[in-house]
Length: 246
Length: 189
Image (cartoon, rainbow over all chains, first blue to last red; front, side, top):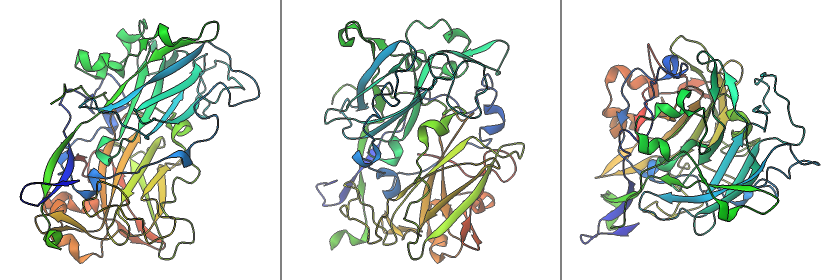
């Protein structure tokens, strides 16, 4: 927060995202959107105090092995060990430091540890599939996990989800809240996946596909992928209030 | 001006969101036993009227003094006078599509240009079939300031009531209808 030349308070505002940056809520290829997407257009909400602030969640939310999904049980999980790392940035390229990153994923066989997942792939007693980390002062995060498997779902004939990891991010303001999915390069299942392809803009869609990162692999131990996440950038707006002259 | 980067697109939380986003203390915006605490309970239904059993609600709000413990509040960050107040809640829906948050009523907020926002919570709704979160607000039925609230005033009067909670024995009820008749007002933030 700063003051402009007239002494008015200047609030951080957050730029609105491009229309095509996110998938349309109604994307009929993904069947569940048909009964769940709102029928009315979204109502424009100016960003005020509630929107430009947000929860700042820190170390208190983290357990010792939350960042390493391969060390949360007595034994090691099955599957190809991978390091997933990257930076959380805003739209101006500024790092978003000390922000909570949450991930969840299927195991190597493509099964989630969830009571509703009854696809008959094996559960792994040594894999929960849940991780948390904070970005550092440069916006960097890192997880160790295993390569998730693809799995069938009943959205359309012979539908398979490409392997993916769910990501949840807070940024520093309510307007920056984002939940997304990270995909793996070269996956042959992209062409038939209506969740990824609900993003109309090809360049925006490509931003969800991680980069294989050989430099970060650990010899005889793990492959590595880099996945940067960009939250919306800031603009500043004057904020006039009766109390400003106090 | 530095080069602008395209934002990362949103994706659905999918049906198994609970494994990743479950916090045992999530529903408690304030600790249990906090004086004046109220439950905000509601059901989420889809366009067919069916309960949405795989959804999650997150809330964010000012404290009862209308303050945020956040550096971008132009009045300065200030820890709440309510011990244990977190401002943030996270509640998943149950097998009937119901969620519950324990909180305290927020205070009114300056909205700029001499306007005042009536007490409100802002909510994000995540679910299978939602490719991006939905944002709505909860207002309280017994607040005189609602009539002057710039957000409520800007809405189609026929839809304004969808943002008003109703009194309940232990707090308030706020149902969320994703689609169809009495569809909740959702915002582009």
